[in-house]
Image (cartoon, rainbow, N blue to C red; front, side, top):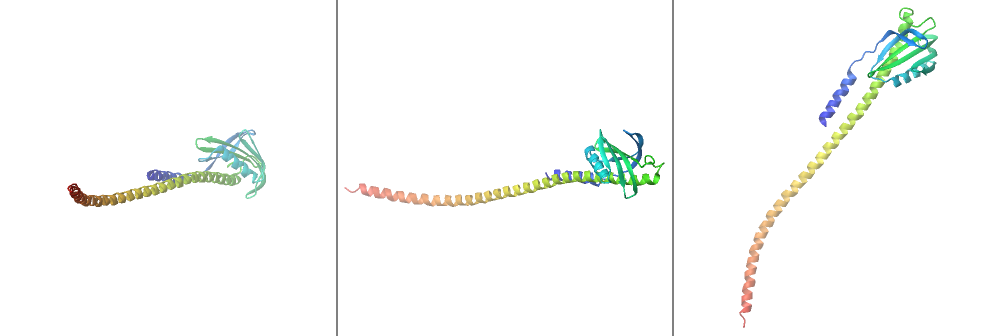
Length: 220
């Protein structure tokens, strides 16, 4: 059990201390509006459902009118007040690949879809915003895994603690039994001595009874 806890702890540490640099790159997205310039980012160890929900929540938090049809998330009138006051239209698709999720997102800023060539300054701002979203999702997913494994680690520690208590209880019972055995051994020795004394007393008393019996029978 102790070895199992140690192994689990090592796995848990290796899972969460390994650095995972999340980067956003240029790509293409094929959507209902056609092929467009897009941002692409891989979110490690997440699932599509969680990412889709977070994207929808994120777009709505920026006043977007959001729809999700056949895996395509579209949002109009999205305003990123932090760096761009003009409403934009956003198209997003997510795809599960093993344990990771690939997110593609296109931003129609009115003068075309944001790209490093057409709108470099705006592209970099959206790139940072999308990266921050991906990092938040990756951290949330990692925290959930950490919480799950921490609960398991706590359970194993609890099991180990109980095993130690059980052993202490059993050892105490053994010690108590050994003490009782030693006490009974001494009692047996005393008993043997008492039996020897009693045997002598019985022999002497039996002799007296025989003598008195003979004496009684001799009276005529």
